[in-house]
Image 1 (spheres, rainbow, N blue to C red):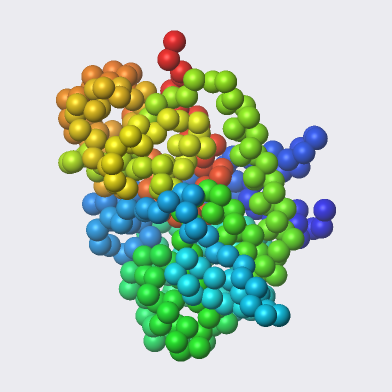
Image 2 (spheres, one colour):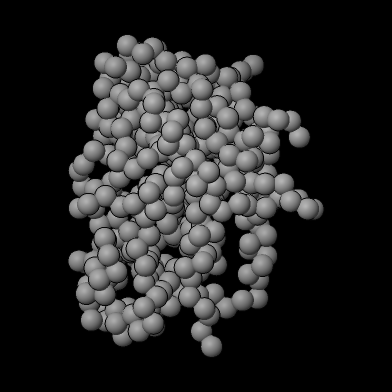
Amino acid sequence: MTRKKRAALLALGIIVATGGFSLAVPSLARWGLSPEARSGASPGGSSPEQGGGSAVVPSGPAGADSSWRRVQEGQDVHIVDSLGNRVPLRSYGEIIVLAAGAVETIFALGGGDRIIATVESRIPIAPAEETARLPTVGTVSRVSLEHLLMADPDLVIVDPMNPDLAGRLSSRGIPALVYNPASVKSILEHTEILGDLTEAGPEAREVVKTLGSLLEQRQRDREGQTPLRGLFIYTAHPMQAFASTSLAGDILRLLGVENLADPLTGARPIVSPEYLLTADPDFIWGAMSLQSVDDILLADQAVTMTRAGRENNIAIIPSTMIMRASVHLLEEIEGLAKKLPSPRP
């Protein structure tokens, strides 16, 4: 294993162990950044990635074609995003990255020296001591096009909250892609391509292979177990839950949880009191506009009549976990597994 490859694995919290690899959780502490400090929800339900504004609920099918794709065009290969933006597949020297999850992933792969600017963020972007020194070109929702053009980057990676920016940059001769993984699998696919775009392809493929194997092992470990039944909600009035077609829903799937929002209709289904009593979730997690456990307990009397309410199996999950599609999500999933209640007797 090369020194560069080992550095990338250590940055991700993957350490060499007897007989293979294991995931060190959390590796964020080694960067002077605790999971709580990185992932705190912002007041009022606004996205932690922005300087304000209303909460944006991540959506998009976990199994849909949300990933970047390699497309052969004659003798050349291009990377194409889900909106049709395309850039040549090659290594780029100076990159402006507007998506915090992509910033974290590029640094984890050892390519942070190629990032020349990013956006302001209320929540620190790992590694905090490195990203805090980066110039900024505005916030996620208010990027300065003038500053972007003046910087004249080789590539811009755009946040999905401002997707039209990619087309505006491309029309001015600046290659741009929208970074919008909609599932954990998609995060790994984006990670591999980010490695190719930052001359860290071998390291990225090793990381993706290792993390993919860990996820598969987690699934094998759960075979034959009765799944827990849970809800992951983001508003209380009305109570709305993440479907499995969201990144939050995909997290539940990876944890082996039966998502009780799935039988409901719509990408952002409403959970009625009647359904809550019938479904009787083992636990309820909240995020986005929900700031405390009381926000959930007081949302409806039916909550206290479920197993989740009776046994206080209710928790607030940091919103950046579902807003920041970073390779570090894999280690945070390990932390979420520890929050799960015991199976029903």
